[in-house]
Amino acid sequence: MNLVFRILRYYQPFVGRILVALTLLVAATGLNLLKPWPLKFVVDEVLRSPHGGISVPFLAGVWSFSSALTLACGTLVGLHLLWGAVNLAQTYTLIEVGLRALLRVRTELYAYLQSLPLRFHDVRRSSDSSFRVAYDAQAIQTYFNRGFATILGSVLTLVGTFVVMLKMSPLLAFLSLGVVPFLVLAISRYAGRIRRETATLQAQESDVLARASEGLSSIRVVHAFGRESHEVDLFRRECRQALEANLRLSMTNVASTLVVGTLLATGTAFLLWAGAGEVAAGRLTLGDLLVFLAYLGMLYSPLEQLSYTAWSMEGAAAAAQRVFEVLDTPDEVPDPVKPVRLPAASGRIEFRDVGFRYPRGDEVLHHLSFTVEPGESVAVVGGTGAGKTTLLSLLPRFYDPTEGSILFNGIDLRTVAKKDLRARQALVLQETVLLNGTVRENIAYGRPTASFREIEKAAQEAQADEFIRALPQGYHTSVGERGVMVSGGQRQRIGIARAFLRDAPILLLDEPTSALDPATEKELLDVLGHLMTRPTTLLVTHRLHAAHRADRILVLEKGRLVEEGKGEELLTRKGAYWKLWQATGALK
Image (cartoon, rainbow, N blue to C red; front, side, top):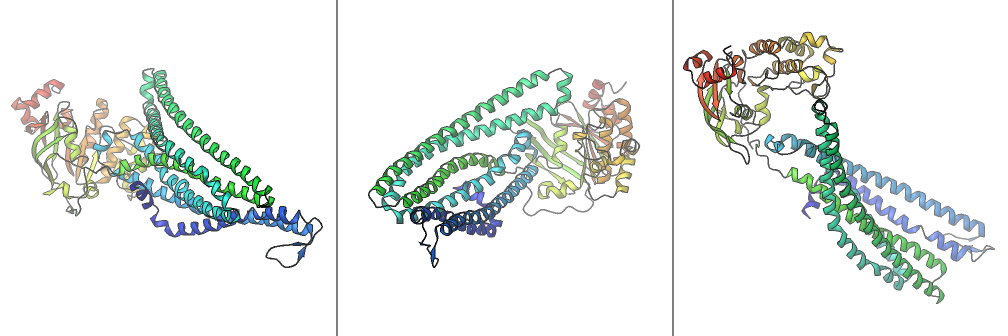
């Protein structure tokens, strides 16, 4: 029941339109109940008076055979057209409401996924999250359009039909309900099974999407190692498992449909036998029996719809649970209820006894304490696994420290809104990620309101303007998915131009030159040296000649700060930094 209320919450803004649709639904149901009566009039009145002299209910005068027959047939067509128009209007309204609710839940789910910390995304495949946004979220619409709307329409038709049948023949009306207990048993038998099998199918389809996404995004590695057939085999295996899950669900649906159809056919046959006896006994006319059988179809059709709807809602419930599973995930890096505003020129960073550990992992950082003054550039070095990148990830609050605190101009980062905090930082990653758009859009990603002149100036400062202008469409050239249309060095320059344009008081550099050749690296270091002169800078690198350019160097070993000072000073101590220098051959 809680699931139902949660789904209905997305329909609250559309209550007015839903009421209009329900009014139309009642009108359509009434018109549908009138459809069999022209047939009764033809059988019981028109055909019994082929020479005319026919009285038409609700109309004065006596009608000829052809006039009465024409009137009956015209009424039949008119009722159908009127019912069709009303039904079309209510169907459109309900579908529109369902789609608008789907828009709400998809947007809310995607926004929440965007806000969840990296700790959540680290343990999940991005394709699974994408599947939940694109496909599982559709359960909200299914639950309403195939659930609530169908149930209400079926109930209205059932009640209206049964009332008419009861007035015509109480005996046959109650006999027609004889199959209902068996339908309830069939629905309850298959409902849980359909929900379980639908959940399994959704998970398998998510795995198929994940395998396809991973194989295609890694296409260069696949081609380089000649593993195309291996990837196809893995994909085929996932597809086969999805096929088996789909086949199981399909066979369950077929079996349930067969059971329901057999029950309804049995009920119809039994009622036909009893109705024929009533006509033979003179308690019903032939027209009454034909109308009664027409109403029996109207009675059994919604019963059949209700059974299918119950199973459809079970399937939708399984998908909806996957949506709410994400929405119920607590944000482990929450925004404060009453955030503190950062001062305009925030640049001082202080780590106070900071510790950090990943879930189900060892502690990565141990009691780190240091201060970076405004405008100072500090390099963080150490061996693999020393905790350098983790340290940098704490500043934008990708994660929160598990111990201690980080201060920004004396303000604890956990008391600052993440949006405000990240607006004061610019980040250059080891591998710059470019979005599928133009060069101009990628440079302006962190500051979309920037003018073209400001974008151009940032590119010039990053020494990227020359190669950008040489591209086929200059700044309006598309870089392709993940920037595949430009080289690694060009991607890094675009990333640095993005940081220049951001012009934030804090600059975070995470191994910005490690994937580049020496010549390109030297050029970029000169560019970064210019960039690092303005904001407070933290540079994470294992290239010690790059670290040597910083005002101060912090040396980490297994998450602990073991040395700090200027490059030349650390070399003279012949401690941890000197050993790193020796090991990397930086002296040569």
